[in-house]
Length: 510
Image (cartoon, rainbow, N blue to C red; front, side, top):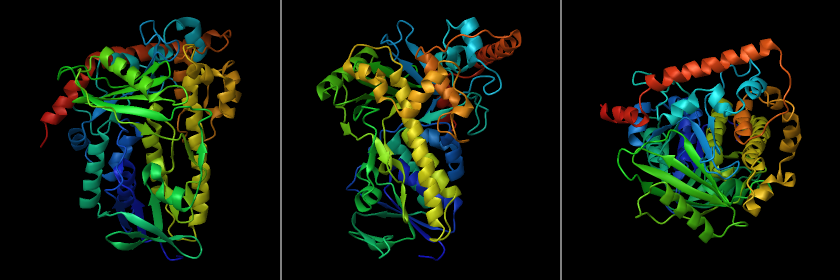
């Protein structure tokens, strides 16, 4: 095991397993990559939202963006929209805000928050500092027909069919990148005397050996959880949701408007996601079983589907259970967990697949070439991803902690500072006096930048104390506000409709 790293086994398919295998094979062609996938273990397959980082990930793997769009029922995602989270008005009374992917114009160079409060505080923060809201409200795509693959006019990610995405990744990884695909069930994990994994014994293929094992086995966490016994660090005290009811529904008409944001609508005891793909919607009700029964969640989902024009004939929603939390360690000896095997919090802000990308890219960039060098890499990996998961908890809790809703114990408990992470309790009083800034976060590659915190804080109605501003600061900020407005006036008429651009891409298939 002190020899050079030559063999890597990825346990588990789905989006996580095939992303990891594809990235490793693309960037380390000298390695032999084997992915073991069992037909006995179904994938969850509901992760349909991504971050803009997915564009670079697909590029690194060597996939074609137009082919990806055509094969995986892809639509563009320019951020998230939150309805009813602040007061429960579901948008009718202005209780709606956006978390766009585009940074505010002037972000990092100009203080935008105090000038916004002083001059345009009656308008939503995101509307004033970014053109994204106007682009999304107008139903525009984030790029033009002639824009190169993976390039953007307005920053974007994707919505897609997770099952089709996994199939495409698998075909590309096997045919183009040389990944060895083994369909079999793992019956036992074999170890060396020092505790390293030596091999996985499979039902049909016998023992499959490797130098490094990647656990992408989903919520079963076959290696890091079951074999190594690494416990899950529960986050149930901060984020209560532990169940979801996802369903796929068709549009009422084939040319129905296609949103380019994930719509998250709050209800009395949870929230509902709504993701628009070209031919259908992916909708799901997220809830806490300590606060709502399954029947109540099903009723909330049904009411939402009725209100948003879904056809009366619908499939029966699936039932998903999860324990919100993440592993106390992600890398133990010669095994690293990525994806659901490493943890899961909830679908809010699509952080699960983004953490898969971050983990896979980190593994590719710092892959230990020998077993002797693995300990130091594992230690840094564990430290960095413990930090990242904790920041995800902070950011997701922010969406709940600031709500003014008083229609259930669910929201009242979320507002209780006793349920807030310690770091969030420390930062919110500081943000009462100033805006979130880069120095509030300790890493260059933060999961969520301070701009994201600003979008959510001020979208939820949080207002820092007003202060007097010199004319120069007001002028600098007003120039940014004017530029954001100019960009919106240029983008809205200059960008194609969301559905029309996707139709064009599908029609130009070669």
